[in-house]
Structures are given as C-alpha cells and as structure tokens.
Image 1 (cartoon, rainbow, N blue to C red):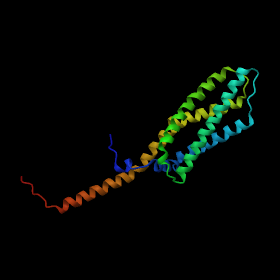
Image 2: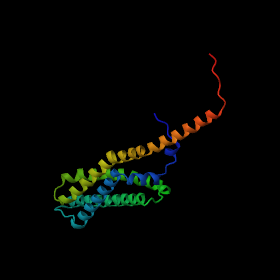
Image 3: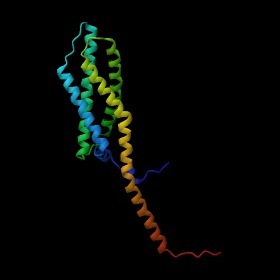
Image 4: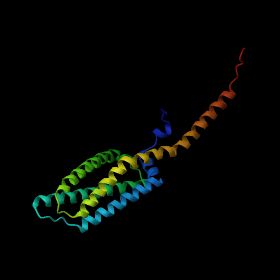
Length: 187
C-alpha cells in the first residue's frame, strides 16, 4: 500500500471540496442536485396532499415531509458546493458537516420506509411519489457511486505534484551524495 505523503495529509476539507466541485464529475453532480432540488420544490408547491381516508392522508403528508426534508438536504449540498466553488473555508464546520452527513443517511432510510409504506396506500398524488423516488435514487447513486469517484479523482489530480516533489527530493539527495567524498570500492 502506498504511504501517504505530507501533501495528502496537509490537505484541508476546504481544499478537497474546492477541487472536487471543479472537476467535470463534481460539476455534473452539483447540476444533478440542483435539478432534483428544483423538481422537489415544484412538486411540493403544486401538489397538495389529498386522500379518501385519514390513514392515507397521513401517509401522503409523510411523503410531503420527506420531500421537504430532501429539499433541506439538497439546499445544504448547494451551499457546500457554492462554498467549494468560491473557495470558502469550511474546515471549522467539519463536525457539523459530518453530523449532517449522518442525518442524510437517516433521511435516506426514512424516505425509503415512507415510500415502501406509501406504495400500499393508494390515493396520494403520483407526482409526489415519483419526485421522492427520484430524490432517493439520486441520493443512493450519489452516495454509493459519485462521491467515491469524486474522492478518487481528487487523489489522481494530486499524483503528478506528488511525483514532482519526489523527484525534487531525489535530486537533492543525489546532489548531496555527489558533494560528499566518494568511497572507493575494493575488489
């Protein structure tokens, strides 16, 4: 396994976010989040829960609340992407960001439960289920596929500078050795 260099260890959260949001994959992810956010806002504003029974109405409201929670999640992601884009220093909020990341996983689990229980109850607006399903699917793809690829892409972007640093160190070491008296090898 490759040892970590000083460059990798000293990289801050702000630097990582800034470099990730500037990659093509980071830009596509941010645009996807913005798109999902717009759809969720549109559906929450235009679709009001209505159902035949109180139990079904309660499940419809759970779908609406799950969509509202996802609106909050994607707004937070938009703020983080904006901070990364303008190179704002967010490292001091690392604990808050980590806690909200854990809450995002809880949101995902809750939204899946809401969708699973809501599928049995008919009568809610189909657009609400579709919008929430789309948000959940995007969240899963983002969490399991896009985020790891973005993190790996940032490591690849550092590799050339690491190699240049290693070359400089080797060059210095060679110059130091060339200045020292040479020993003769006895055969």
